[in-house]
Image 1 (cartoon, rainbow, N blue to C red):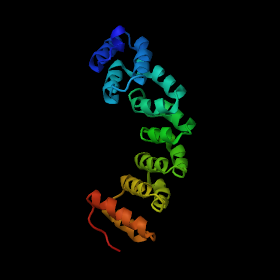
Image 2 (tube, rainbow, N blue to C red):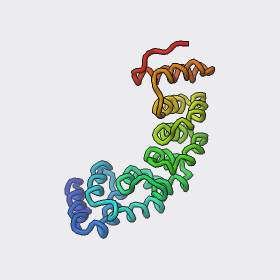
Image 3 (tube, rainbow, N blue to C red):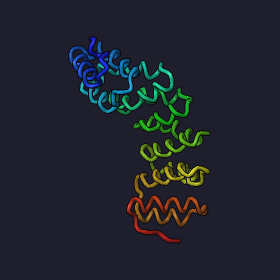
Length: 213
């Protein structure tokens, strides 16, 4: 137990792994709290340890801290949430997305959403005052959405922020059924020059043939 506080990251991580192997459910709160108190534990490494321990053993401890921690700690914990749950209604990621108000927490949560139950909330966040939230909401729609999201994403191509336009174009090209013909038709239909140029840029990045009006 004392080795969990060792200043050497490799030693403390080895101690965390040993504790999780002995009794994962009991060790999970200790390990997660230790992670929050030090910056030398890489998120991917802890994620591996928690995955080895199993979602059932560590899910409650992680969910509890995610919902009760201050925003800065929520942001740090969110990448670990995917380790502990499967897509679906009632997930802790869905709960954080529904309750969060801080732009940093919303942005971090939008990067983790992975189930259709969050789609309605993501659509609302596409008009959030913070441009980073809008940009991550656009990307999330590209992962979660279908053809019904096209109109919303097309409107985001005219956002005042370059990054939002860029992410909206990326998301549009991720939607099911999008191919070179659809991209060309979209570009022709756009009346906003900036929106049209952004679609052309992202299409080129994805390897689509050049399209012309």
